[in-house]
Figure (cartoon, one colour):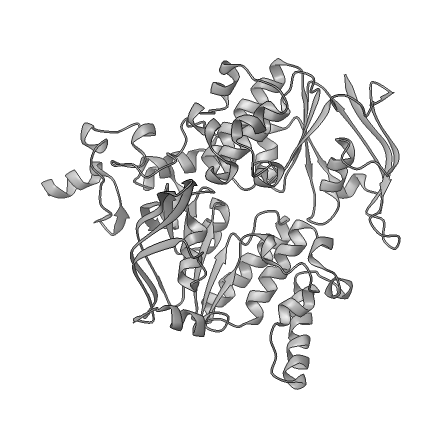
Length: 203
Length: 315
């Protein structure tokens, strides 16, 4: 399976385009790292790939097919700040089951404790919430994960735990990962290939 | 060397209503002791959610009303009362806040950086200085007139940084100034923080990025579940063998360049009776479960672990 972005262009204001003619390809058995300056449009590209922005020009395809915007979207985005992606008035159990019900085994791999399920989002730390948002994105229908700075806010120990679990799961289930980060050292360890954003953005 | 900031046995807890009129006290910082000298950068290193930002907020007196603080904070030997905090903050003590949500969404960013002015002359001077600081961080003139929602995460952080540096503080509290910034801006931030030190000022750098702490700080305090578990020199942090606490060792070994080694376990959610690292500790003893070790001086290194207390007792 192959996720492809062809000649993506996008601008927030009429004056200044932010993405121009970006093309990118990601196979479902690989992990690609994306590195670039802050404010250069990496997160915008992530949102386009995962269907959060739709008024762009160019096309995003899986195996040369347009992705239907009905039903479950097979490209899932995980954000940097998990606390901003959860309903503060839902308990964690509801937050997680909104997407699917993971097996106990998978919960254990991600170090998710049962006692956390009855808590509100503001009662858990960033590292704990991020485990939920990753697991939530790993619905069986997910084919690609876009990880936008998912470990930037976490300490080094948690960073390893989260990446280990995510990579093992994705390798076993043929899910491709696009890992966006500023941390080149991290990307060198986890990725098969690193792309520099400036080189693919033709601005 | 004068002690710029002294924090002794600081504890912070929050009272929350859980259901109806039932109240619940949750302790977030327990027995925190740390000091910053002039001409020194001290980093506080800990994972997100461990209560680091609250330390900054308590120094500046901007904790929410339901918080309860015990212990003592001194600035230049003088106990910081709420009144004194309000007088000093923004002038002698400046904060780089962690979250980009601290920006006013309805105000153009250049105006926020300039802040309050008494007259037009002061405003013009500050405007020039604001332009200088902004361009140093690569924010061009078009950024001046933008509102916070139009900025990217990294740009917003640069605005926060510039705002604090415009105040020309004696003590800078930098609460996570670097995440989400590209390499060049991180270097820029690091060199600015170091510059402050050269000018005999003190910096309390709160971060979870060990690389940033290593590059800037003289001493590093490791924070775990609301406790300071070790304060060691930055030099010793380069090698896992030179630090004492098992969690500190795990932290260093888990860096991508040191092998990306996996350590299991998560921080306890609530305050525990015994050692906060008991559940995950590879060298735990029976007494660690029920007794809390104190922060002690072991050959110049501050450490909270019974393994080192025993060595001290014997010698």
